[in-house]
Image (cartoon, rainbow, N blue to C red; front, side):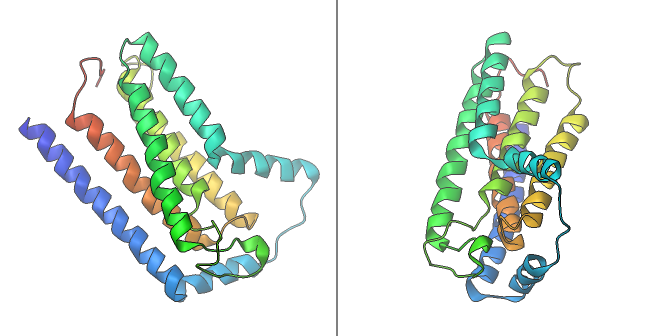
Length: 218
């Protein structure tokens, strides 16, 4: 119990640090701080002309951050892992992650009300839903939870933790880079999304570690 308590407390510190990062970025967005100058630079940067195929590929990468896509993949995978290893914990963790994401990020979007780059104007409290980026927060949380339950609840030799973490990181980075390139989000939207999504990911893992399951393979 003491070991689990220490792990949980350590996770709380990491989650707290990530949340502080989110608060700092949010402050920059609200006061139109120096970070917002980077938003303008990236927004106004020249983009190369792309072929139809290249635009399609970028769109598919961007879709890796869509909740409808990733939540479906996560919940279906978690369901089959749960059935295979006779534990509903993977599915419960996945549902917790999806609900936490929609609640926390959704409320933040409504509260900040930042406009999207496509409107060619950057305003807060204007009824927009740009900040924090749902793409970024969803990517790091959903793919991170998926990597975790595959590692934690699948066959011990089937999934290497570093490989799973690497893939989750690549997917998240790809979503952020493409979103910035396509101007679907401001850079600060993406950074804020990574911070809040990372904080939620750490908390979901902390809950699982603090209340262990007999079906865990690690």
